[in-house]
Length: 124
Image (cartoon, rainbow, N blue to C red):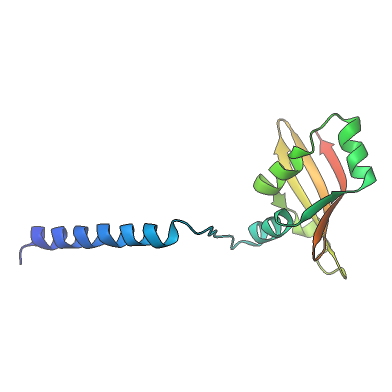
């Protein structure tokens, strides 16, 4: 069998394999969150979010939109060195995200069914 025929058969098989994968996996909501940052942020995103009075007043006083929290949970980074991951019953994480020219820091208490934004600080 010539090399060109082998490449042709391989290409046809590869094409049908990709089509089958797209067909079977296309409708599923799959994600590949394997890094520690991604797993923690996804865990917080899927829970009910509660704002502490201190955090909510910080957003109001600085005229910030609370949608920045959702944006930070999508694009932010978890600072594990400044987080308390051994607390019982809820872990406390520090999430940072760059907003315009400043950095938004969120202190989030991650419990079983809720995630409470305890503090918010916007640093220049």
